[in-house]
Image (tube, rainbow over all chains, first blue to last red; front, top):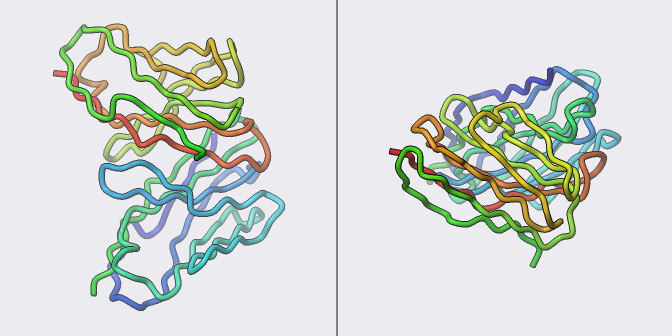
Amino acid sequence: KQEVTQIPAALSVPEGENLVLNCSFTDSAIYNLQWFRQDPGKGLTSLLLIQSSQREQTSGRLNASLDKSSGRSTLYIAASQPGDSATYLCAGRGGTSYGKLTFGQGTILTVHP
Amino acid sequence: EAQVTQNPRYLITVTGKKLTVTCSQNMNHEYMSWYRQDPGLGLRQIYYSMNVEVTDKGDVPEGYKVSRKEKRNFPLILESPSPNQTSLYFCASSLSRTGGTEAFFGQGTRLTVV
């Protein structure tokens, strides 16, 4: 059974810092890994999708990496801004789970001015 | 615009009163699913559908029903809601269940059962 863990659970940084969010998963037989952003009480916004054959994906100030052999993914946010404050979730889509996304508990990010 | 639309966004109901949360996607996706999100438990899959008339249970299906009569729609039915079904519900869709298929989520339905 796939389990996904995100560290840290919460992170508070000053504006302008570069930061890394971590995601680890137990079953390396994933099709892909997706990072989402969730604002309080809102829906999930997809940030980046990494295929199992890829090592990384970039979108603007965001860069996500995937290392299947170690069961880890990281989300790198460059030059953080107060508008980046949100909960960040990673989810793996696994081969044995009929397409189910298994989510981590999320990292609550606060970027203060 | 590609999107997944859920209705209603907010709902307060009483125990035992049947309700339906609708979900519609305009991307011709085959795979659709429902998740619930609860503090400390994260997002858990309730039901999923791999195509029209093909549905199956996820991790927490008790107390829920679904149907998939058309490709675009995947309603979630609570026949007799109970307070432990108070939660934030999300519908999601993707092109298929495998490979490089990005999941798109609706805006969520906050359900309160009193």
